[in-house]
Each structure stands twice: as structure tokens, then as C-alpha cells.
Image (cartoon, rainbow, N blue to C red; front, side, top):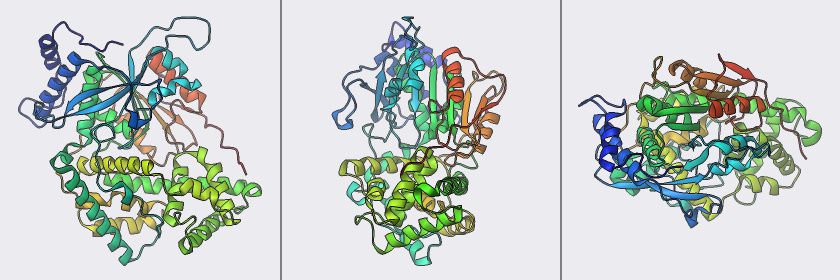
Length: 526
């Protein structure tokens, strides 16, 4: 793939880039300065390209990956001001037919991927080409990942000492007392203060609009005339913003497990919807455990499984497992099973073993992380918090949070209050807020795009996929029916993967929205 400038001289490149300026702002209007700054930064990046070499040692990335950096403005309104470096990883297209017939596969440029978060790193993504489901795509595309701004090693953010990040073991009341709420609110305020003190004036520049602008600069640095992009979870919101800001720069886009882009929901209402959806997913998990009572002995009905879970939580409150696993750590481990049903057998096995007197599997799955893991988790959480708090207005009165979530917890107790404590720093945020874009494209403004979603996804409820499908003219939705795994593209469903390959490799979409049968449920183990 080309890494140098597309044009003969940097001056010509810059003029061409400005002529194709994004639809971000009209001259003199809101966003105009950032639009000009993005064009300037993209011109510089295209002229410089990316010098790929060994990846940073601290990231412990495999030798097969090659890494480089792209320089972007901290503040796009001031492209000549402070700049930061984003780390980018790449594995070249193999150009070899995975069928083993010796056929040479033509290259289609770079496929850039964002795994979501916000706060997740995509540096490992290019290794997906080693997985059978990705081999056809990896034959045609350079697979490219990156660490978004704020995510180590790309100008990493921190809001507190990583050693203080995990405060386990902790309680996880589904009906917290007023005193408990006051303590957690004080912690949230202290966390927001820590973000402001550690990041200083730079904090305000870590938000989704700048993430979309960064994506445009990375595209230019890769030497791509137009962007081929796949985003999962939060990555779909990032992709939607890019499509709104830079529609003429889009080649192909895949939106996998979709954040609802309605500006009225970013992010407070979206989190309420997520908490409600996780209750349904928790019910699915309990039903699966009950179906396999003969294996796990946790109850032959969802109610009995709930009783087993509550018994474990009560025991952990009295005596944390291994000194590190309390009710909150138990809840966190089982919340992850709501994202990925591959976790179901492991979590059920750990809960069963704990109640039978063996806490080790639960400690292994839910215990305190290593020092290195704590640093990464703290960094990821800092970026998540900064982006979501900066992206949109949030209620600043805890009484609003208390009212809405007390009501919600009556019917959806599993995740509701945990979600509150995760996002509550936004009530006390000290940086200015952005106003979310109203993402909409009309006929012909954007090339056809592919939307993927699991019907029972809890992390990004299905309504988000329907909403994005309505907002992006020419998009087509492929639904995995009766399934809830978060992130379906390139996974276990051959039908979904067939649509993904047809689109990325041939630009071909179904004539209309369609669906795939669900993947098989996981097999029990014990």
C-alpha cells in the first residue's frame, strides 16, 4: 500500500485537499475552523505518509505487526498548535487465495478498523487475518488498526493512579441506600476532578468529533483516496460521524453492533436503554443455565438461578473470594457474559464451583488484575469517560440520575446502578461539552453502507441499528435473529460473514434488509 503522498508536491496536495474540504462547516459557520484544520492536517499526513517499523515494546505486540505514527492536531481549530501522535498498526494483504489454488488476489487498499469503547485499542486488529473467517478479506486488504487519541500509546489519558483504580472488593447493591449513593457521588466528583487536573486544558479535545477528524487524517496518511472502514460498537458512532462530516471520502463502511446515533440519546439516554437491555440478556443467560441444571446444579428455572447468584453475592459480601472478589466483581464478571455468550459456560462453571466450595475459578475470572492490566484498564476508563462526558450535555443534578435510575432499577436491576457509577463523573465534568451531530445523509450523498446487528444485543440495543439504517440513505441492515452477541461481523455466523465478504470484496449488498439464523448456543462444560 502506498505510504507516500498521492501528488507530486505537498503544495498541490494541500490545495487539492482543501478543494475537497469536508462537509463539516460552512465558511465562517460552526465547525468551519475545524474543517479547515482537518484539511491542513490531512494534507500534511498524506505528504508524510506512515513509516512502518517495529511496534512499541510497551504494547507487547507480535512481530507480525508493523507500526507507525500519524501526527494530528490536539485542537483542529488550531492545526499549527500542539500536536499528538496516533500509533497505527498494519499487516499487508496476503494477495493469496485462501482456497489454496495459487490464485493472485488483487489488492483493495486498506481496511481500517475501530473496535469501540470509547477507550479500546485497535492495534491488535490486523492479526484477525490469521483467523479463518477473515482470510478472504485479509487476502485483498491491508488490515489496519490504531490506538485512538488518549488510548495508550496515542497521547494516553489518565484520571487517577492506576494502583487506585480497582477498589475491590466492593458491594453492588441493586437498591443502594442514600448513604451509599452519597459516597459514590463523591467518588465520581473526585474522579472528574482528577481528569481535569491530570489532563489540564487538553482534556476538552478528547471527544468523538475529533476522533472522526483523526480518522480522516489517518486515511490521508495511509495514502487512501477514500476510506474503507469497519467500526464495532462505539466504532459505529465514530463511523457515522465520519460519514456525516466526510461523505465524499467514504468508499465502503461497515457498522457492526450499532450505537443509536440519535443526538437526543448521546449519551445519557443511551445508557438508560443499555441498562434495560442488559436485564433481558441476563434473563437469557439464566434460562440457559437453568436448561443445563444437570451440569451446573444452579437451579432448573431462571428464578432458582437468580437465587444461586444472590446467594453467592451474599457470601462474597461477608467474605470476599481470595480477598479480591466481592459482589461488584461478581456482577462485573457476569455483565461481561451479557456481551458474549462464549463466556456463558465459563461463568456458570465458576459460579457452580464457588457455591460448592471451590472459589478459584471465580477468582481467576473476576479477581484483581496485574499491575500492567490495571494501568491499561485505568487508561481505557479515562478515555471512555472523557469522550462520553465531552460529547454531549449530561444532567448535572444527581437528583435527576437518582430519579431516572431508581425507576429503571425496579424492572432492570442487574446493570442499572453499575452503569450509573460508571458514567456519573459526567455530572461533575469540568470541560466544555460538544453538541452531538444530527447524522443524516440523503440519496446519493454517501456510497451504500452495511449495517450488522444481533437482535438481542444488550450493549447496543437493536433500535440503534434501525435508527442508523433510517438515517443513512442507501444502507442495508443484516440482522442475526434471536442472538445477542455483541459484534457479529467476522465471528461464528457464516451467513453474516457471507454478507460482510460480499460487501467488502465486491461492493455487493442485499437488495433489501435481510436476516440470518442465529449462531448455535454455547455448549455447557463442567
